[in-house]
Amino acid sequence: MCEIFAKQPKENYQTITRSIRIDGHATSVKLEASYWDILQEIADAQQLTVPKFISTVYREALEHNGEVSNFASLLRCACLMYARQPTNVIEVARQELTSRQI
Image 1 (cartoon, rainbow, N blue to C red):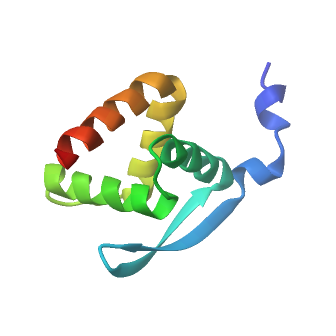
Image 2: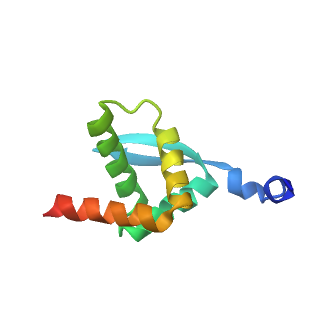
Image 3: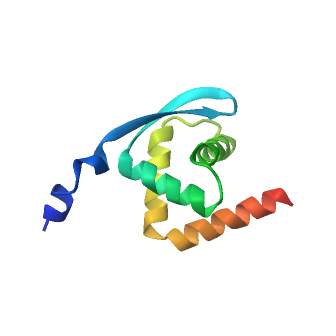
């Protein structure tokens, strides 16, 4: 039963650190390769680059929570939300982006 999980390619869970800018500040984010792939899908669906999407998520989380204590975990959970219901999550995100542009 667990072989499908245990025998996945090592590349799926290899950690990758990427340097990005969030509101002009350089930082790095370390995630497994599979999460980077999902973040790319989410960003593509919103016609954003991954760094722009990540910056937007960070800024919105900061506005909502006042702080972002574990941003990598927040990104992983965002990927899980997308993986569970990609159409619904992207539609809500598009509506939010549209309402901010008006």
